[in-house]
Image (tube, rainbow, N blue to C red; front, top):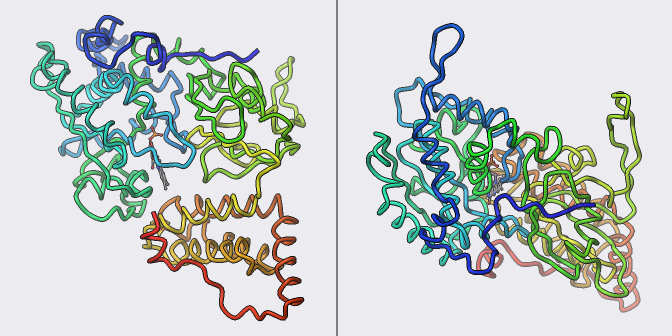
Length: 481
Ligand SMILES: Cc1cc2nc3c(=O)[nH]c(=O)nc-3n(C[C@H](O)[C@H](O)[C@H](O)COP(=O)(O)O)c2cc1C
Ligand code: SF4
């Protein structure tokens, strides 16, 4: 039976737990940092020594930790790409933009246990020879910024930050930087541009891989809030022990944001892959099931950009049998383990680990129109396919949801969506705005066609010409929020 497993959120919701440093210290806070700074170089068989920094980086690799921001990229591997020979300073940025619709996990950490994030950051910075780091927090999280600044002040006062931390000779400063309310600032290179004081236009990779050419063209690590908190636990328990949590290649825990038509929406921390989508939706320990009398219609498994699953969908997944052979198994969508690899194998992703549940009361065309309006509004506009395509899709969906649809709109939408991603755009927003359209229309095409057809029939009956649709123009979208 799936259980909650609280590693990151161990204390956050305990009665009486407060976010001030004294409470954190009473719960063993900053002990792992003390252990880190007291680490000695390790003797190697060839007579050489491995520095404490290298030991931590190795441990993070061994832990199998994958980024919790969206792409699920190996944290240890990302750190190994950092150019340590450039002679330039290395920066670390905590991505606290958390803007993917449906996602509300990073804020639980920042608002309730900010020192855990700071401790994770200081250890990560130490491991990577970073002396200046930033927390880039979503602009709307006004209180979050205040809380983090207060926590940083407390940490400085106790010398967990600043010059010569705890007498170790290591210096580090962390600053909070507030965004101004743009989703694209969550994309790491857009974030870096924004931090440099410019428009958050994502940069082309290559050459602008942050690990080599990041902030101020210096090597930079960008990691998500939850990822950085995990580093503290990896150092505390050791990489190999951490890797026992979760499932192979999907180690540790994840905080899942569960929203939509369930009885108990909320955030639930689980060992990765040790609960299925169905358990997260239906188990009384998690979502508690759908609202009474309702049936499941669809599930978005990883934030609004993840491809939607249709109730009853089946997937062929490769699994290891008892004798170690890889065998193909048919798995119902609800039985998919909630991990990185299973969801990718099923054609979607766990993304920012935000599950959005839709029951049979959902108008799927309206739901997609809502998602698409968001993406049309948030495209930064640098790439023509994304800038124009996201708006065309939103306009077509506006038509369909305002009585001006056409039966051919379904195909029209997919044609646009198919022509945005696949290397035609600078950043992954191209995929993010196309995947919902491809999957919603692909899996619920009959509803899109029926809506357009009904509009056509009504217009024919009333002898109304489709002269001009009236979708919002881009400037209207820009001011509508
Ligand atoms: C359009 C877009 C928005 C993103 N928004 C966020 C975000 O809000 N928070 C986040 O941590 N990562 C976000 N990411 C992923 C980041 O670019 C980056 O991969 C991540 O911060 C790396 O951290 P991780 O390796 O710890 O996951 C976004 C990516 C894209 C393409
Ligand atoms: S894909 Fe979209 S959001 Fe990303 S850089 Fe291009 S226009 Fe901007």
